[in-house]
Amino acid sequence: MSNTSSITQFLLLAFAHTRELQLLHFWLFLGIYLAALLGNGLILTTIACDHCLHPSMYFFLLSLSVLDLSSISTTVSKTMANSLLDTRAISYSGCVLQVFFFLFLISAEYSLLTIMAYDRYVAICNPLHYGTLLGSRACAHMAAAAWGTGFLTAVLHTANTFSLPLCQGNALDQFFCEVPHILKLSCSHSYLREVGFLVVSVWMAQSLFHVPPSPCPLFLSTGMFAYLKPSSISSPSQEACSPLCQPRSPV
Image (cartoon, rainbow, N blue to C red; front, side, top):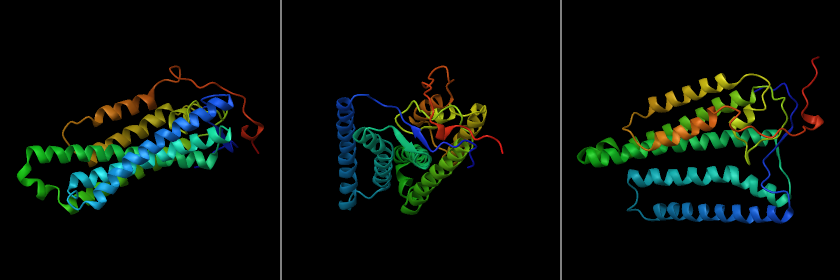
């Protein structure tokens, strides 16, 4: 993932500019994070300890709780740290990792929700064949496919995003590193390229998981809007970039 710019860090969106409000946001995000940790922790503990809760539905619910807890940890933890330390900075490598893990976890979660919809479809429409269609081996294979799809999607989008030259500053109009906001800093026209990768990702998800209609397309459509909306709808405020992130002069 080569990059012709010398950006060493990005500046995330600041929720407040006064120390009191920054600390208020820290405690607010800490409360949200602890609530997510408590809720998902209870689900994980209950399913792990109660041997009666080991059918496929609870296995997928356990995996979903792990993904949900991991995804909120990827974004909120850095936001809390920045609010507590009175900074907006995130390193270039940290931003790459945050984008990768966020896309990985969100894509795997979408795939897992699709699998859970299929699980309920079989349980309702084909109850006599439920044990045959969704045995322990089939559940393990589908869960592995969900995680594998998330990993491949994250690799494609992360490589595509950070292979582009970034020369329009280093300020992101978001409290975590997100692909659409990073693309707005690019020197080149990356809109159609990102559309192509998104289409490939959607095609892969639909090819791997042939299931009846479910609420998952709504989840996907909101994500597509966030990725593909024109820059005029939501353009970040362009801030002065430090000398460290100016484009290098050609050798």
